[in-house]
Image (cartoon, rainbow, N blue to C red; front, side, top):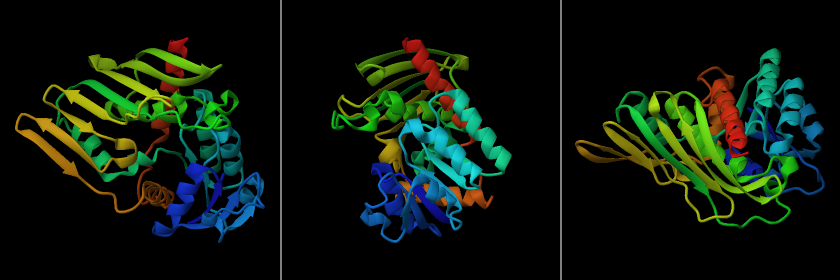
Length: 311
């Protein structure tokens, strides 16, 4: 599959660096605001503007690694150019934007997937399967966190309200997405608090998500607090816990009446390479997308509910 990448930031670099490890992925073009600056991982690709990268006739799929506030525009433009799209999370800043993007993908007969790469990990897939099959009984509580200490530069887009900055969109979306996936639903009620480090930009926060049947999930997130990337889901007959499912989710512990089992499933390659392979398989219709359109719409609605609940 011939790819173009929009953006040359940290996430785009990770995707581009890992693309050679995929089964059949090849980087053809890179779109950037500074085409004269060629990063080492893109030396074999054609450098150009964002529009040029979409217009390249060799390109079949586009990875959008741009700031959140640019996802809507460039996803719609990529789809209109006839390209399949893998867009970084969060897919959209509002539910209506996500709906517009999936409507466009359907109109053009193309694939659009939100790039939650952590869900491609074998151990994460197994944990979801076990819980859905009733391995821990009825789910009652969940705790998920994703935070890191203050290391961002002042000009980082994650501090820019106009670019969809903030901790909720940057890292809080991960545990939100995972909880919704386990419950196969979005919460029916939300309580939340956001700590604004800058006007309209949350540096950290927390949310309580209430689901049908009485299950509840506590989410914490931050770009300026101590690092925590853990996740735990508890049910009436046991629990599952990850130390870090987002970046290093190759093992989890399953605690049940018989004791504690450690399930280890190392990934065969980097997370972005796994993601690119999964995307190619979905384009070929050899497999379903690992993140469905409905899941992405649920995430968008839940993130919006958290923002509204925080006031």
